[in-house]
Length: 114
Length: 111
Image (cartoon, rainbow over all chains, first blue to last red):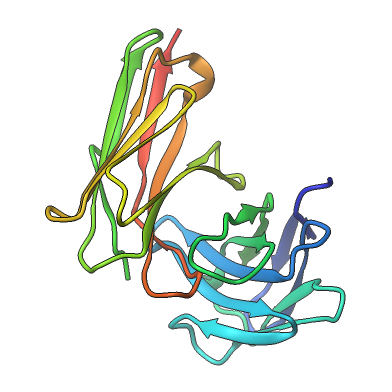
């Protein structure tokens, strides 16, 4: 099976712009989670989707949003970009949503905000 | 906010030696997981240990969990240069699948 894919892999934006990142889970996986990784804050949970419904949300401002489509693909959107949004954004998928599910991570999208 | 705190922050060993990494956490957990990350790339799941388990093995990996001390350790035996990476512990609380990560340990294995 192909792994989790994320597009684009690298992105450069300027402050005030918005960005959309895409995540295609492993075939058959219905749960997708997003994480932000920065040198200062480490890995932080953004949100989790299962069957097109947001199940859980981290402590991020409303500028960060996401959605999941019927084919389980997910997108996250960041509006009004700030310098501090520069990070590696990681997507993970699992078969189902649940505490004991193994999550498989994609390679990430590296976003640089200038 | 970080749930797990790994110790040490950085570890440098010779190939063939064992590497031990520790993780402490603050609240009750459903399970604890260890991940590896190579050079700022995606995370690779290594092992999951449930709160009612004390020890688990997977190949050269051995994980222990002490819920009374809220701590876990990851032992990599007979390390290889390819084990050079950052290692993260992550906890799961409750029934959801949200991972709360520690800051990570940088392991360097010298050939």
